[in-house]
Image 1 (cartoon, one colour):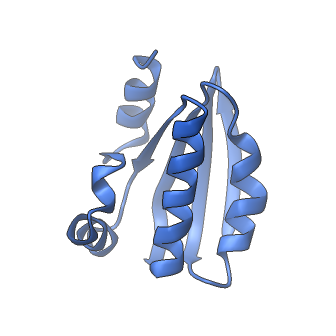
Image 2 (cartoon, helix red, strand yellow; image 1 turned 30 degrees about the horizontal axis):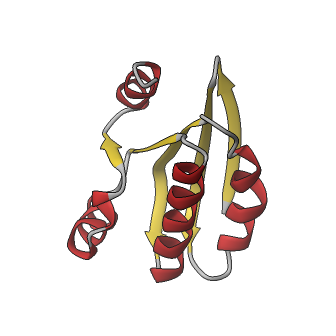
Length: 113
């Protein structure tokens, strides 16, 4: 798995490539959790995530809770259909705003205050 972190004004973009599973969640914790600060805006680009296990769902929930505790905002972009379906069935999409494109996600975060 690879994670690339970029900044665009006050928005952090974390682009994830590969599988999110029990072997890779520690990398998400190490690379993405430090980005969570008060009132942060985080876009998770999931376009190149090919698989997500229950451990992946747990780490997303952890990210959501920590960002929510800091009064921040997180959006997901580019979920593969199978991952989106799994998140919808399990109720995880209730916690996240989900967009097809990075531009849509950035627009939502730019309008958030």
